[in-house]
Length: 470
Ligand code: AMP
Ligand code: ZN
Image (cartoon, rainbow, N blue to C red):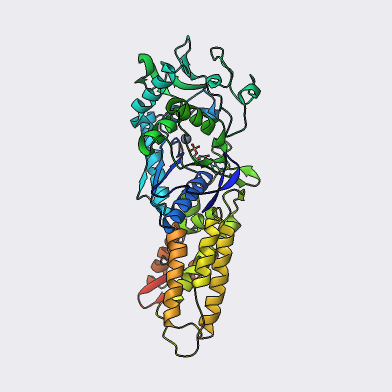
């Protein structure tokens, strides 16, 4: 496929070699529920892996769980996000991490993120690899210990620093985007290991210093441990380009003397009302927020993947409603294609061109807008041919197979699932059942209207009430 690389800022052939493809994606910092902006980034990685697999490639994906070392505001000084959340919630950092990690996995499962072939290493379980890497950098003079016994990376020792983000060392002056600290040699130097006796999580680090790792080192160490010194692709949200990924390159290439990643992919932010969706701004939705409003996880997945990953996606509930409609539309078509009788009249419906155009669109830098346009045209034609009796059994089987390939395998949208009514609707339906049993028909009608107002239809069948999406 052709894929944009944020290092060369160009479309490149990807992967550049045969055999398994190694992908490292920066995962969640588990101090809070993931918001759907985070999920957009993770789902883009899932879409990439599914596209590569559809093209017959084996993908080894590693997504780390940050359960220590990610500072508030990404500065080296300040509080660890995990420890700050622990203090706020009156829990231990380990309890916080375990709780939000579980929530993260349940989001991934609901969103049909492919778990097989994915490794999710926790930072706290890979400290010795981080320490070994820091020792190596110290031995090579690329890192130094400050009088306070913090360990810093010396950007001056890595001439390529800035090649990803364009932030050259000489331009990174004190007070600019990097935090100034008196014992740093250069304002752009960043923490590898931090000594802070007040930090709850402590390990014996480089040169026996008790402390905890910086955030950047965890990704370098875990990418190297699970995927090797040179990986095929590194992904993350656009905010991670600098300093996080720039620092990862400096650490890995500084320690190993080899290219760190052959390709870099950055996902543009999800925004709400033109502003970045973020935990700190409080303008975020979690998946559970949206499920509680009655939307399906499939619609959330659809919406988050429906715009090209290098364009800003503006989140609105209207957009989500439209995504819900799109999912239902394709599910209806998939259902209509099952059991179509063989027709002997002339029929000329073929899925071949749509199949080719769909896969070509995804191979073109994951051009989902084009891929979805292909699917919509295909569905319109299929529906028209079905209605006019010009789509027979064999074509229907082929068309259903194409939808399964495109939507279920590539897009991760389950075509057979019916939308689930939200709790609120279920509660009203239960009350209505009681009202009917009590022969209180006025109440029963009132409850039916309340259910309709929430976008659901209730039907009375001989097996009891049935709920259907309006
Ligand atoms: P965090 O849990 O904050 O470490 O972030 C996890 C991932 O989500 C990182 O790759 C971030 O770059 C990404 N991310 C954060 N905010 C957004 C957003 N609004 N849109 C898309 N990705 C985001
Ligand atoms: Zn990372």
